[in-house]
Length: 102
Image 1 (cartoon, rainbow, N blue to C red):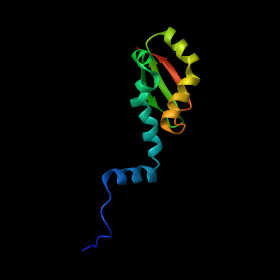
Image 2: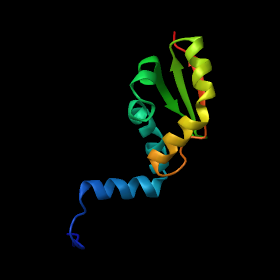
Image 3: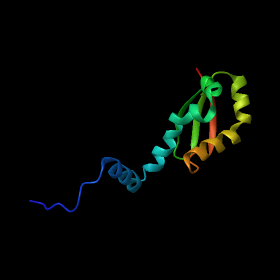
Image 4: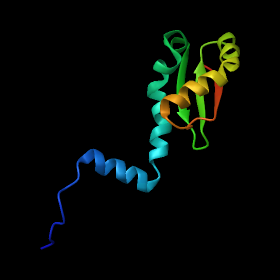
């Protein structure tokens, strides 16, 4: 019978350790942008946009309700990236690609 070596780790610590060792912590951090989107951009922009995914290279894909909003948001991209990356504590997103919502 195997001998135990110390106390079992709490699930949260074990998961965080596994994510870090496997390199998935960066993936999870980037994906959290999707859930945080309304808080980052505010209710007006959140109503007309839907974040879709974040790629490994740090590109965030967002669907937009109209061409007018796409143009406006393209001009705001630098400010939005600053908000996103400040909230994450690092720079998980490097660019935003806007697409027309179908």
